[in-house]
Length: 171
Image (cartoon, rainbow, N blue to C red; front, side, top):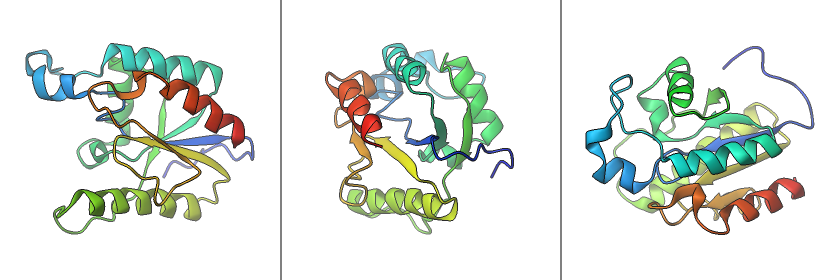
C-alpha cells in the first residue's frame, strides 16, 4: 500500500473493476487486432473512458483497483495503462487477493471480490467508498455499489452515470 495516501474524511474511495466497466466485451472479445502492445491487452472503450473522466472531473476520487487486472499488473503498470487509455486519474492501490483456488461459480467470484473490498475498507478505516463492477456485488455491498450489468456497454450504459452521481451524493 502506498504510504502517501491522503487522510481526510471527505475523500471518496472508488473500488474499480475494469472488464465490463471501462473495457467492454467488444474490446476484450472481438477487438483483438487492436491490442495495445505496450501492455499486451485490449484497449479501454473510448466512450466508457469519456463517461468515467466526466464523473471524476465532477467528483474526484481515490481509485483502488478491485479488478482481476491486479493479478497481472503492478500498480505502476496499471497507472501507465490508465494513462495510455486517457483515463484522467491515478490508481492509488489494489485490493488484496483472497482467492486461493480456481473459480467454481460466478457467485463465489462475486463474494470473493466483495470480501476483498470489505477487507480493504476495514483495514484502512475508510469512511466513504463505493464500488463499480459488472459482477453483482449488491448482496455484500448493498449501499455502496453500482452494477454495470451490460458488459458490452460498461459505464456508458444509459442511466449508470446518474446512479453514480446519486450514490456519491449520499456518501
